[in-house]
Image (cartoon, rainbow, N blue to C red):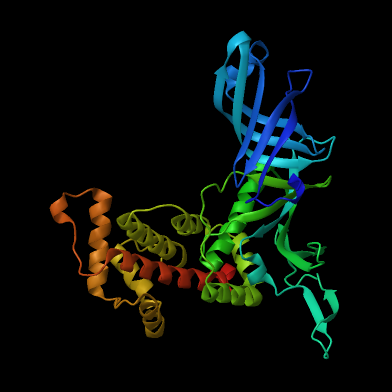
Length: 413
């Protein structure tokens, strides 16, 4: 399998020719991509690589694989450098990005401009569309009579303010005779396509990819990975592999969360995308909420993070003049119905009440940690701190979804 056919979670090791800018002849080496890790190794005479020893990093580098694929590696840092006898040195570099290009094209991170991207993430097939394949069966034996494929977009729409972006979905499909017995395998992949009407540099486009991935991670309420990524400009489409998500464990698929996300996307995605992109009011809120899903966090810091989110939501959507935490908590709690509170308690097997006792505890808890009071002033509660945290997190999610799906949101801010 070539790099152009790989997913972010695949593995490949291959011999390559490395084209350094200051060296006339290419150097032989080995390139390994292993599930979000990119490593380039090579051996050369020490004298010709003095500049590398001083710099310790490589912004971009062109290589050619022995299978004929042209690749640009971006953001390399040295992992090991060992000098042996006769001035022979072994180098190993870690790179952040691997981009498959045309033979005469090099991606320059500071110069190359991009107009959009296409990506597939974990569980996209489940939330974006049913299978594109339709199979007709013969009544007499139950075997397929015909197979049809429908790859038309179902979520296509544009956002015209500025104008800034266009959003569509797309699908690829293929059939494969899998083995000697002739088993037929049908496969499809779902993508979201983003087109920008103002071109962006590489760094900014990668940030946009992360922003969209974070949005879908929030809608699914699960940790997901970018499985395939293509960057686009007027010249070509570039397949990208990266090392940005190394160590992330994808959340186990939960049917209830998938169903909720699919319903949101089918009924409200144009509104969600519009509200998400036309204002930066969600930006820091999303970063905090989603980061809590992906990083290890102590339980008390987790609760502090929920309190911070509630304060931020109140500042942005409710009363920008009120700064007292107790008042903010009261207003936030008043937003939810008894039915919503009961549903969350049933979900977590808890008995939390949004009352003054909880408000007082959260107020004292925040003050204790914010001002580093002495230990004797640390507030106590009979409730489990983690249960409080996930309960508040669920309230925050409900509140944020209500704003994202509000068609009149932009008129009110």
